Length: 351
Image (cartoon, rainbow, N blue to C red; front, side, top):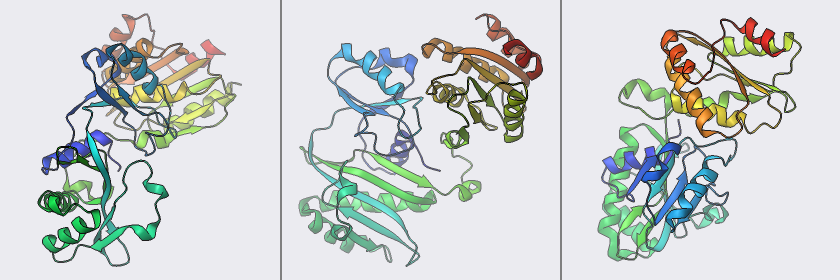
């Protein structure tokens, strides 16, 4: 599981690794952001800076249009449901720092480079500092790394970051812990300017306190036909496939397959709508949800939020059955959004 940037930074902060001051925002909370600020798209992929997902804003009047543009910017198949608003850091130098599993030595490897930031992938692999962490000899490792980075006077700060990152890596069953850039500020601090953490899903049974956003939904979004006029949202692979099959059998063309899974939070459902609206020919979105673990009222709130926040949202055909169905019906009725009793009646209505 790859954590979003704000989740990774929050985790690093609990291990006393300095991070910029910041706060997470949904699209309806933009009025609480003040400038100057850096706005960052919260999606589980890299390359956001080069593709427009990270923007510096200095004028208050620019917040609303810029944030709206980032929320609607799809990067490598992902649209954000949240933005991270952070203080602007006065940067003196940028480094690359990471811990990962060295599968050849079955150890934890520290990887670093003197040139961090957006250009790190263009660096020659032979130029990286690489050391396996052996017997927790952090002092000698710190001295080596401080000399390599040419920040010998910051060795004390650097050792704290190495030790605390190592503890975080071990405690949380990490596969990757990356700080890029590790920023040396003009006033001499070392701060995690950006962070990427991947934890081992198989170790989740040891971490019942994990409450990270589940980013797997996006992997269950499959485009079937870009010319299709009917989009589908369902929960559970079986119901999602049955929905697509029923649309096809009715003589309509389904554009996508989308299984939102068993933990359909409002943010997750809203993000599904954002993915669908990237398709050009959608005339109607069929929402076919059976509420077991999934709460129908939570899905209903996401539907209402989608209508408020997404311009030109296509027609919605909604079936919500099961857990908190009556509450969902009452919520949707307030916005003149009727519930259909079955998928069959939906198909009859839109055919």
